[in-house]
Image 1 (cartoon, one colour):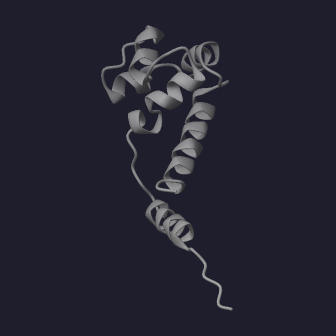
Image 2 (cartoon, one colour):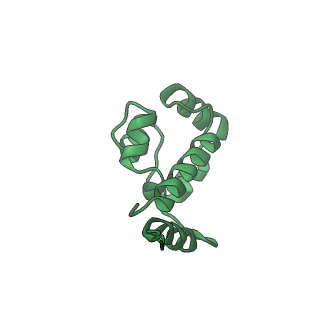
Length: 104
């Protein structure tokens, strides 16, 4: 008796993995989308978090000018994370998990 195996899910998983392979540039607001930010803070999205920080954040240069210890303090006091690096790593993992599971 022949056995049929439905490989659609496996094929989609392989396709998703291939799309994620290599280096990609992802906008910060896509990495830390509203779902991620609201799940890990009291803010609805990244812009709301930035606005609440009290720092001027209009350009990449503005962001780079913020002392790391002050930014980490704000992040630790207002999110589930102890530092900005920890928040970025978690957002990256969530982004990859969502990408690998797309369409499944």
